[in-house]
Image 1 (cartoon, rainbow, N blue to C red):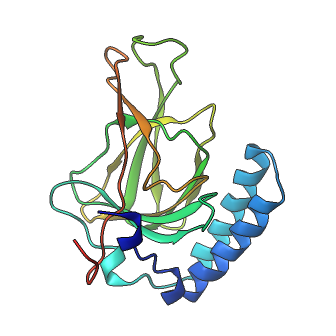
Image 2: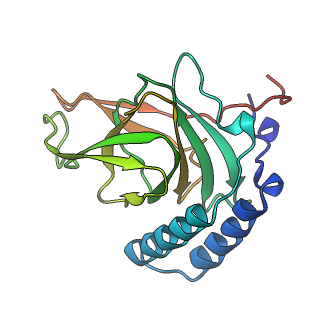
Length: 199
């Protein structure tokens, strides 16, 4: 699967297209990560509160694993917006992001467990707490220096989140961790295909 086969769908959702334009403006200002993510968090919260409809093909769970559908990918790779979907019972490994990120819940319940970022290799991870995020709620999930968590569906319906990252998250190599040992494995959450795209 090549990047050329991925077709972001923001143009089909005017509210997401407008949100992407505002994120691009914020990124272009050169704000530090904490100011940038706070501004994006506030904007995404307002966007979710105003309401919009995502195409059904970007909210469809995969029976095997969680998936991320591209809503917008900046041409220069400076940020991306994804629809992330976990089916009932699905979750992620403990993982990092290697960039900043903001997450808002479009539908369902997301359970997030945060971990202290390891300061050395092969050291067991320390859990910092667990939160439940519901429709309309928005959180800064990560900055480059604080970005380790595990996420799962926490309800009896799939959870759909709007994720904004400071890179093309569908091509970015990232770390996953064994929380018991601290062992690291590198992975990439490749973009999911929507109906009609080449496989």
